[in-house]
Amino acid sequence: MATVILVRHGRTTANATGLLAGRADGVCLDQVGRDQAALTGDRLAAVPVVGVVSSPLERCRQTTQFILERQAGTPYAPVDPALTECDYGQWQGRTLSDLATEDLWPVVQSQPSAVVFPGGESLAAMQARSVAAIRRHDAAFEADYGPGAVWVAVSHGDIIKSILADALGMHLDLFQRLNVGPGSVSIVRYGASRPSVYATNTDAGDLSWLSKGIQSGDTPVGGGAGQKAP
Image (cartoon, rainbow, N blue to C red; front, side, top):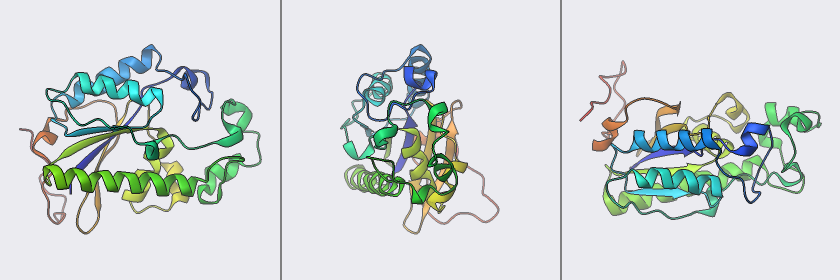
């Protein structure tokens, strides 16, 4: 299959003030977030990506623009609502410190699969629609560009954590063990027999080895020699 680079949007004004922005309009990258997105774009400049699929929310579209501006070609750049932020319902717009006093908070931490946000979405539904979207786009990019294709999905922290949990074969109740920082890069390849996770939550490092794609085949016993830079 193709290889997907999962990018979380850069830091926002809401992130910086401890506010759960959810799907609210007008939440933009702050200066730190713009710098993070620019760095991510610079890291990906060495990788000729065939597409950059974005959540429709402004912070993701801003991050996507930093990536596209640094690509030598013109990747396909659709917006997909299935990659949008979780619908936090009545939690949206409240501070994290306030939400931590809610009875639901410890359930979010320890048993996410049981969580349905009041007036909003369940975390299980969030994972199901985001994983389905990633796998759908991945199959389409491979069909159009071949198994060496590399593409980018720009989305949100909980979305990317749920996608990584699925790729790692983790129950959703364990996804809070994962961290996905603003502007970070994670890498997944969906093979014929199982997904392979090549990186999680990276915010630095050379990605030029991705320019030739990831080789298919069984995982080498002992770990193998790793990927070679071009």
